[in-house]
Image (cartoon, rainbow, N blue to C red; front, side):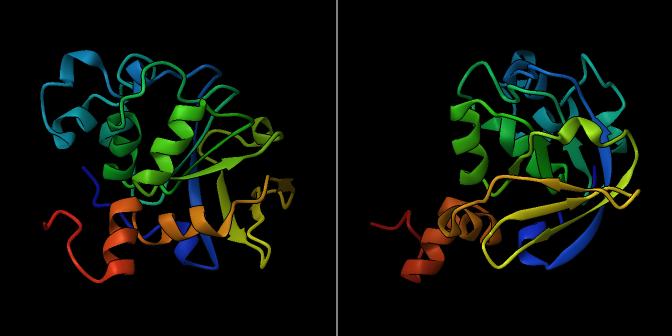
Length: 180
C-alpha cells in the first residue's frame, strides 16, 4: 500500500494520475461493510474492490480520482474518505458530492474539487492541480484544457493543508485535543 503524500493544497502545482469512475459512487464501495470491523489499513485494501479490484494495490501516492455526480452517497461512515487518504489519493474531482461525504472528507484532510467538467478528464491521464489566490482550484488536463472548479473556503483549505480537522485543532491550540 502506498504511503500518503502531502496534499496538493500544500503545494502550488503538482502532476497527478487519474483514476476514472462513474456516477453515484457510494460509501459501501469505498469502504465495504465486510471490512468495517477492521482498522483503516485493512479497510483500505478493499477500497473500490467491487468496481476497480486493482485500485487498492495499484494506486500511487498523489493519484486523483475523477468521478461522475453524487460521489460519496450512502452512509455517513468517515472511513469512506479516510481510506482514500490512507491510499495516498491527493484529491477527488467530481461534479457533485454527498453533503456528509463532503464534510467527512475535509475532516480527514481529503481534498474534494467540485468541477462540473470532470467528465472531460480521461483514465490514466496526467493532470496538474493548482490553487489560485482566491482558493479556486485549477485543474489542467494533459491536453492543456483548464477545468473550472468551485472555490474552496480558506477554512476547508486549511483543514486539508493540516491533514484534517483534528490536526488543525492541535496546531491551532498547540496541544493534543484528546487531553483533558
